[in-house]
Amino acid sequence: MPPGGPEDFESPAILRLRPDTNAVNVRANAITYNFDKVVSERPQGATDLASLFLISPSHGMPRVSWRRNMIAVSPRGGFDPATTYSVRMLPGLTDLQGNVDTVGRALVFSTGPAIATGTLRGIVFDWLAEKVAPQAFIEAFPVPTSRDSTRYLTVADSTGRYELAHVPPGRYLLRASIDQNKNRLLDPRELFDTVTIALTDSVRHEILAFVHDTIGAGIQTVSIVDSLTLRVMMDRALDTTFVIDASHFSLRDSDSSLVGIAQARSRRAYDQAREEALRTKAIEDSVRRAAAADSVEKADTVQAPPAPPPPPSRRAPPPRRDTVAAPAPAGRDTTAQEPPPKPSIPAPIAEIYLTLEQPLRPKTSYRLRAIEMRTLLNRSRTSERVITTPVERKPPPDSAARDTTGAQRDSAARRDTSATRDTTTVRDTTTVRDTMTVRDASTARRVSAVGAVGAARALRAASTWAAATRTDRRVGDDGHRAPDEQPGATARPLVSIRVAPPDPWRADSGQR
Image 1 (spheres, rainbow, N blue to C red):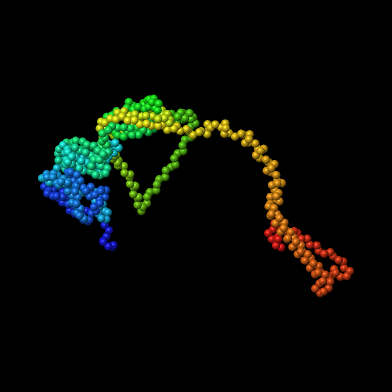
Image 2 (image 1 turned 135 degrees about the vertical axis):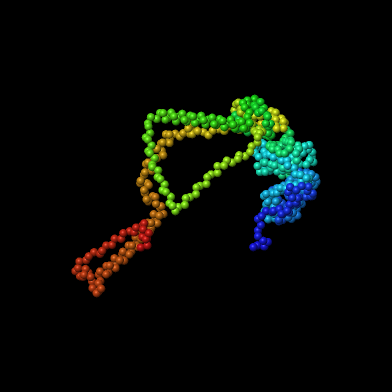
């Protein structure tokens, strides 16, 4: 076992929490958490320990004191009398080994004789994106409000749903924001929305967050979909009651001539029209194919031969008694998954499609003007944008339509075999097969020299052998002459030796 004991994989656990949950008439200066190990001052997913704790109600960020395995939390200004407090420790607390608490802890107590029971519930949406806003920051301010008003607060879960409990009855300004930098403040360009509600026992309300601006909507970008369609993207969402039509747009050519706009539609209406057109075309194509198949069937008078009967099915052999039947495969989970929630009100429009009466000309500048475009906060603005159409792309030339007047070759020149295929020159065997001409001259001279030397050596050897033969035939071993050398004998001619010249192409001809 290594020094220091076994390795620790457990997240820090709370040993003691003061005051106790659901306690009343509490007199305390802080909420104290005691853990079973030393905790880190740097939590996961937060900048500091104060970002891990929510005290509702409060006047700002809580005060946090850390000492090894103890954390003390208190609201700014201390606890108010006769007030119900909800304290929530968010997930993210870590120990020195890096083990992270993923559960958190909630605590409720009252400095008065009773605990409030009012609850605010609902869901927060990113309205323009039409999706839920996870971890949205929820605040409830008592009406009338002021800069230093007490606020009740909580954080939505991963599905955008929130629950702000233990709130006393009354009128509240409920605000939900998408806190991107997690500072629990409403910064510029952050999405939020507010609503005033009257709470008696429980209230459920949907909040649609969007960017609140004090100026109207203007043209952000213009893109060309095709020669008859323009896509206009606004920099701010339009009011849901704003009617989009062609009268709010004008398009002029570079020579100030007006280009007619046949229709202006939102993206939702444009996509629906396209889907309807594709569906209609698919139905027409299906009817056309069915009519063509019917006509072919009626025209075909040849009766097809009957299909052969199917082969007799084999009956499976009965299972053996000593075999165990395999378990049936588990069925597929057919439980329908719940679709993600959508806002009850359609998203505001920020993307518009314009259909033109005449196609755009290539390599031409146009000026598009959007007139009095009204936002969700009832602000209107007129804006303009200049666009330039691209150069017209020429289609690739068709091989069948190419101009071959200058590209065709002269067939007479191409098929003139008398100039390109001279058979008298190509098939001259006397020239092609002349080995003396083809062979290298140096090689031929080397072969002739080697043959001459070999022939000279062969002649000298033959002469020596002939002389020795004549001597042996004239004198025998006993010193007497040979019979043909006796007096009166008829002389026989010497044997003539014919030496063939050496083969100049043999490798050993010059060494003999």
